[in-house]
Length: 317
Image (cartoon, rainbow, N blue to C red; front, top):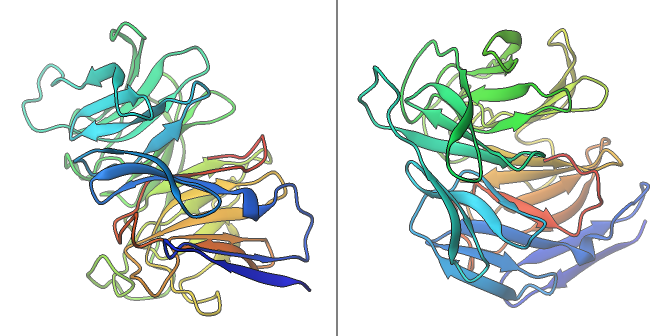
């Protein structure tokens, strides 16, 4: 088995361990992320290729085919911006009829038809927004414990056209059809450990962050402060998992974005884990660490939303 590690001036660390079928070379990876008041792209050499200021807590962002970035730019606003930070499209959520409280946005996705999905916590709904800013579809959400900061985290359209919605406050992943009917759900559990407070590795709960549907119908779950990544089948049975301290020398804290490569490898976002831990980790299904990223100069301990570039076409994120 061949190992190498490149030391980078920005404290970004890249490691590769061969031993499984590869469809991408991690030495070609670059990382888009938002933290420390900026949106930045760290290139494969560890240098910042471009950056623009943004004073917002960003829980979702995507590099679009145009080279622009779709992301959350304030508590209730989604924008498409250029890499220079210029806004070219903007949607600000307004209160739905009958609701007068605050609204927060934690998820957005550009859809195949050009509309943009926006999940509105507080409003308890998903909207699909046309390029002209008008709403083409509204999907009501089922919320047991409503709170404008905790109604939703990541939301993703499935290949079948449904939506997987992570409800942080409910500790639930629910799948909705386009009428708002819940057609599948999965309740997060504590995995045999007691609940504990904190955003770092000491914190443990059921505040789920992300879920992604695989081609085989199973679902990958980034369990937030559940400190783990796991896969469940359609019946909710866990068929694969990586827990907080299963990886040598790495401790999971708040698991955020997960990218699933075509060869089955997973790139896992590890937020609030402290400078002794990488912010991104690629592992294979044998739980071998194949690549890590750690850059506490460009990004900080609150790096939640990332996108790894240079991964193969067909990666699920």
